[in-house]
Length: 72
Figure (cartoon, rainbow, N blue to C red):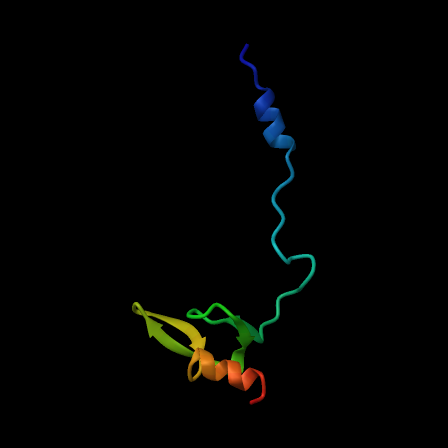
C-alpha cells in the first residue's frame, strides 16, 4: 500500500484567504485604472480601447485625475 500521508495533508489544509475580503466589502463606485493601477472613483475614469478591448483609464490622464482627486 503506497504512503498517502501527503494526500491527507493536502486535504486538511485551509483554502487560501481572499485578500481584503474580510476587511472591506465591494464598492461599485471605486474602480482601478488600467494604466497607472490606482483605485479611483468611477467619475474620475473613462473608457478607452487598449489592444482592441474597452478598459477604464484615468480621465483626462493619470496626472489630471490625481490633481482632480486632490482638489487642485
